[in-house]
Length: 356
Image (cartoon, rainbow, N blue to C red; front, side, top):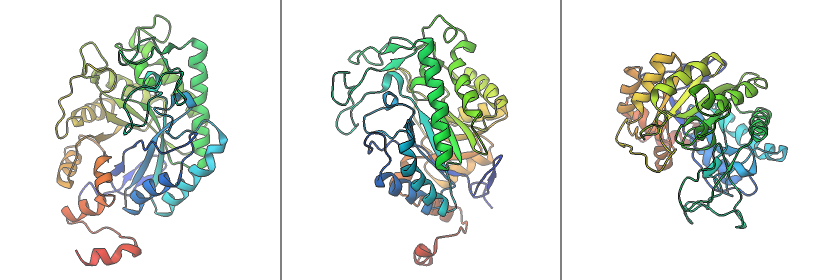
């Protein structure tokens, strides 16, 4: 049997194969509420036999949304709609996770298909953004407010409360979004964190916000798997890099984090990314090897043999995909066919299998 279709044992859960749906923002919510769109969007991947489905970046406060149309988990009223999604995915024998997030200085934008511009605070769909330091992402963006120590602790509490709501809704995986230039990543990177207090300067200080969040979330976990998505490199001189990412992963493992979901980039506009097949896989491999922690590889992993080689070479423990699932929600079945693996098809779709 291929490794790609071998189960992966987590602490309290089992991935039935090594193919996971990466979080994908849909910009299809009102006031943070998940809708029927999210149910169908996420449910189709579970029907397609993905091992786990990770829900899009879900904001822990309204100002933490990337756009006004993002999902949220800042109030109890969000829970019933989320539980409906969870129950459906579970009914397909898949795991489901949620990505807890705060966009920081990259918040308050329009829907991407309308405009990629940041909306000013006085706009009906905009608001004042927050960040570790008062540095805008783009020269045309408004300047974010630098968080006070009280504001930082308030956000730590909101991440904890978001995790508690996610647990109430039934999620198996809690993933903290510390990548792609959003708020936690803004604290990690020396290019975006110019603070001179306990949350800036040294490596230990720059990771403190994330460490505080993880410690807070741990107090409410029952049997959930705790993941952290990171950008392993800023792809910019003087920025966050894989060496710091590896040291962070070592510390996160000690705190009970089970998986590092390894992406990259997003912190600054001057990044120079060499985008090609497997371009982020070496980061996952180094973190897996040096930190001795489970890692997920993501980024231009397009076919089954490519994914299988990554796993055979022990460069990662599982594969995350986003665009490939958008192109084909049943890509898991295609990968199984490519590797000559026989996997269970739901009885409603059995006729399709018989015609292959």
